[in-house]
Amino acid sequence: MLYFNENYRYLFMDFGYIRNNLLEVKQKIKSACVNSKRDINDVKLIAVSKTFPSEAISASCDFGQIDFGENKVQEMVKKNEDLAGKNINWHLIGHLQTNKVKYIVPFVHLIHSVDSIKLAEKINSEALKIGRIIDCMIQVNTSNEEQKSGCEPSETISIVKEISGFANVRIKGLMTIGKIMMDENDEDELKEVRRNFTLLRDIFHEVDSLKIDNIEMKYLSMGMTADFDIAIEEGANMLRIGSAVFGHRNYQKV
Image (cartoon, rainbow, N blue to C red; front, side, top):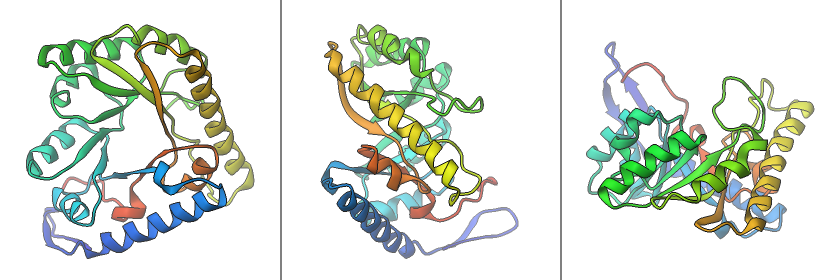
């Protein structure tokens, strides 16, 4: 586990617990897939490593995890530098400001949080400068919560069509965050989360049916620690799981 002194620096690190957590999470994913009659090999786990140190990510790599999610550009850039020798796919899952795009374009594997044409234009222009094509997903605010990023569900298709003309951006799917639950055992809240995921799945299939050039609807990214079983039932093939892998976060500076 992690231990801190008064300056919140890591005094001792024992990341063996991550291996057990990964095994437990993968077993739960497998069980959810079995219950939904799905192949576990079709579901990709993104370990959300935000606020955790590079050493925790390095240990996770040693245990076979490759895909990691970060929500802050500065933190992801630093970790990419720290772990340059590791085989890592970096996923930007948080809100991305246009003025920070240039810092991640050289190495990011997949941007989950494109929610406007303006942002896609910036990614396209920065990618063009270095000759990369950046894989992205459109974030959709299916829960209609004001504090969340994401485009309106009704805007998704028009945004996808517009971005399809960008040579250095390739849309690979859709992402959403289910409604924030106050009580994870509340039936009404669980039903609302399911509706959020069902809506994204329906939009995903609608976009896919249009067969738009330069658009590959490959990933349906939804489901986190508290609701990934529902997400799997509703068709998710990419899960963003953090605390179940790394433990509870300390959001103070480390």
